[in-house]
Picture: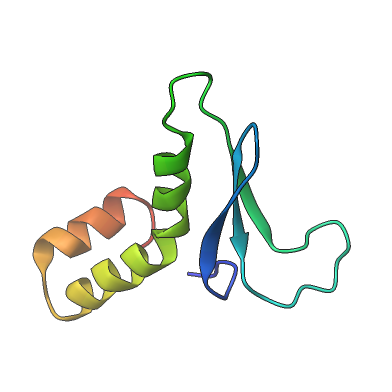
Length: 83
């Protein structure tokens, strides 16, 4: 699976949180942005942004378990469309 390389981290802004990749991206438009997370006044945007930022590490962990033969991990990857 290909996704934006580098460590994903959360940058706080007044009205939302940004998930950005810590990579050298030459595009002036992109600048490593992965997502903008808003809460619609529910206060969940920070937790959601951190969950999105953890996605590459979570994927690698689950993929490792699947490669070791864990059937639940294999099924999870299939359900998400990664295998």
